[in-house]
Image (cartoon, rainbow, N blue to C red):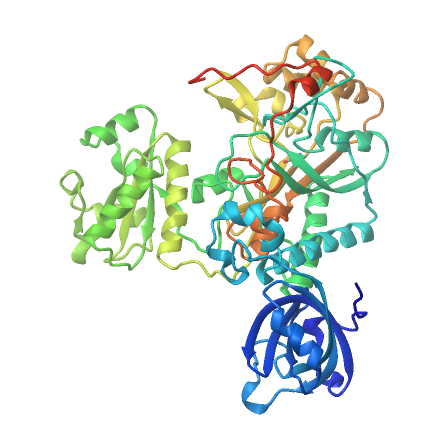
Length: 591
Ligand code: ASP
């Protein structure tokens, strides 16, 4: 079978080609039969071009055009002409032209499709993923993957200019103890032993610093075998970076440069540098989140002091246990009673034990389910803490353990921001959150665990503090209320590393069996170093305005970790398993 050498892409035909003979190849997007004249919209990666078949131009081509169906693959040769005045379509870049076809070659046929491409957005996602190669033909998916390419390309370009090396680290590796459950790969050579797939190249990139590479980056595939909540994938891609002889500020300004480059070149948006910084403590106390969305204000104000000595049993119980009361102040919004009730149920769904609303009216009067327990001058008392409080404003109060109550207020704040239209969706709001705690207490395990990971350096003076008070040299970059990435300055001193492992409950044997190589490397001239990782799937999703990271990954798994296209994972024959020294034990019902 023959085809004509492509001279131009379908979407690239322009005025200078009028009167010229060109060749196009692509898919039949649509065919409209007007009897003696047949129109075909031909599609390739660059866009659409209208083809016209008529016996006047070629009887054979016209005959073949009669048999064309959606998604047939063809190659054509013809003359570019202007479209007649009434038939111009300004919605596509080639809408002023059409191709009078003289010759056509049918390269391949297509059966009736399982779904029409222009209806893909409404098709069940499992079907779209089963026929992902069809879904990928839609202009939306083509755009998303083009965007992904451009972002990754811009990253490589930037880091190359900054003298970084891109270095691949192993996929078959050992658990890096970063917290998540890892995928295991059985070894055929060493029965009973397993490789782990990396949750991130964390230890390898640190060892690259020990190896004197100084500036490393990688577009790294990472794997986490976690129960898939919300928008997670078992494998994902991150921009991974590590540098030697640097401080937090060096890494932050390097990433700021990268973001300015990406936003500038891809979104045509100038961001002003340096980006704002906010400590973790401030982010939590003011916005109830370690990734505050600062496209709108709506801060949390603590009102605990106004309720000391309250006779309200539930608030008193909270305060007696050391709990606190925080409030969100919504200015000038006339909530209806049922809207207020709606916010109460929303708070309950968010995990709060309750939400109290207080609506201020004229002359300092107010309305609230707990009104009779509040002092007559309550408006005045609140105004002393929230000077912008006015008549007509509403307060939403949550009481509880600080971390819980403030987190719930933080969630409510974002939901209120969305519902009240306080967010400018065109805004790009970036900030660094810094000074994270080093450790957090894991009630379930009865144990301290790392907030970032065990290799993160504590801030100076940590030896004198209680574990819960120690701060980490860690930072996150936040984009419109979403964590884009995070990193830290690492520990390079084996004594510090041992002490941190100790806090995490690792005894000497655990340290030896899991990390002897790291502790030894730290005794053999490890330079001070630090780094960061940015989630590429999420970044592309946000820049391409998609709802899910699955929309920016060529072949994602479903939300239950299944690949409907290849039908993975699949059972393996017991003969094959024997080679690995494995036998499958049937899961007992209910386990
Ligand atoms: N390894 C960390 C992660 O994957 C990032 C870092 O500390 O560089 O989240």
